Length: 226
Image (cartoon, rainbow, N blue to C red; front, side, top):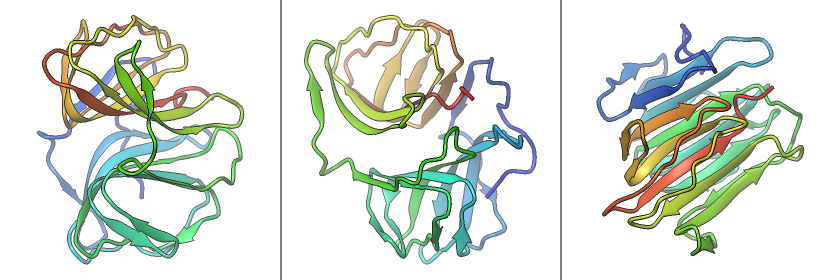
């Protein structure tokens, strides 16, 4: 499930992709297309982040993962031998997982394959629509934590920022990757609407804020640290 040429491979640069305007590329699997957001071809630091579109009835071949696969259902639903996953469900398949990912009705996924920083056999399934979120009224946001890595390097969460909120400036000491799911987020550099994917390198500061729309976003930290 890997691209052929590197994309946004320099971890020291800001990366931005508007998935709404990107064209779909056919894959070797019938009924499945993708948009590659980043691809790093490296024996120890390899990773690929893509948006995958499954047409109704499409299926990936049965795969036994040597690495780790995370996917998040943006819309629609999919399933494998281990369960069924509806809209806004996050799934982590650890190394050694064998499965056949398919969609009977069609779906769109955010998918990240990567060589893990540390070995971890934990499988995670979180339905963001039924899970209990944490409220942070002083920050003007609700947060659903998806995972912390055992060594504390990697974290993932979904943040839902209220309207007219200014978040503190921060410098992304371990890097950060964001996929905007709903609404609009802004900072001193750009405006990020639903479908925007951006990656801030380690040490890059910004001060995001919302205006008259809330913003729901999938956030990962630590993917740029090895």
